[in-house]
Image (cartoon, rainbow, N blue to C red; front, side):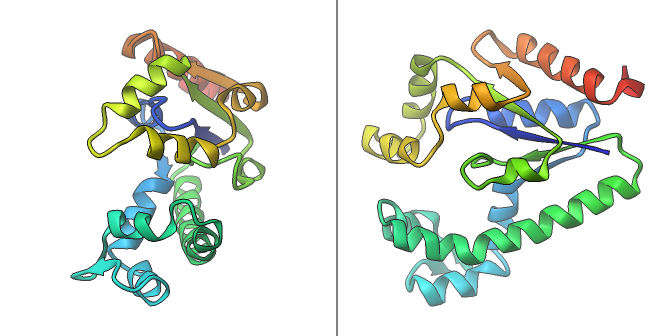
Length: 196
């Protein structure tokens, strides 16, 4: 089974692209979705102990947590130290299940793939990208997003140009959904010829 890492900076259309792989029958593991599950489950008590006041009714309040960790490198490292291993456990179970099902290809949707060294766990990497002005307009249209928050998020992400240079595949999402879907299908055919 080939493991394809899927990544892209904020606002590039990665989640939409991951859904396109799923729609084509490729199993996809979303690190973000795993974090959401963990924040409502196993990780919540750990986070509350480390960052008091961030868990409400057993679920991590992401805004409260962001208030305690954004812009604080040490706090972010503490958070990642117990969240990342839990996400890796879920990822490993997903890959085991995908292999057992006979899938020729599986996708690991990891926002901070290069930033965390996760490309080492992938056979190939696809980066979802769009021009900077398109990215900014998408991100700043999100509820609660500010230019300051956007800048803080971008500072902890590998620059888009570097991601594109390091990737095996680049999926440009600025040209509409059909063009992105065509790129996804091309990648699936290249990596799992039986599907083509």
